[in-house]
Length: 112
Length: 113
Image 1: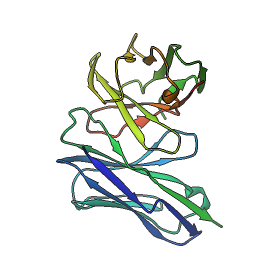
Image 2: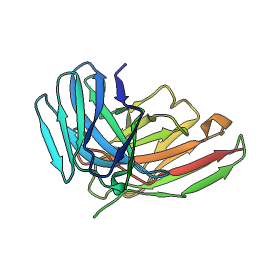
Image 3: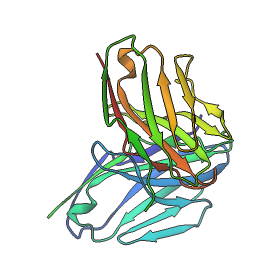
């Protein structure tokens, strides 16, 4: 079964303090890696899709990168509104139709 | 911006009762999914649906569960006889193509008492 491990489980940052979240995965033939943001009591909100090692995507203060074993979500100069749980999910060759395996997430708190 | 919608937002039911959770996927999407998230745990895949049939289902999706697309816009998840352990947030998702990102709805919180 495809596995996704995210670290750290929780991260507290001061506003403006940049950091990275890690997602390591074991999957037979990665077809796609997805980053989502989830606010309490809400559904996951799509952020990025990465398909192959070396790929990078950026959106505002977030940048996602992908290697053959892991992905990083870099947060530059975070603001309190970036506080959320960030989820990583993978789609592997074992699934024909987009079954995603999620990690437990990193709960990010940014304080002013 | 198009979005996935789900109703109801919260459903309370007694053990053994049937529930139907409803979803309206994004209108031009072709692939539909149900996931669930037990409080404090991972988001877990239940089932995927394409071309009016189930494409893949997880071990969780047993005979008590069924899905249906009764018309061109709705996508439903039925639990025939709910158990206490079915209490969770249920998320519907849809995607344009299977390789593309899945867009999730806001979820239905199911509480089984």
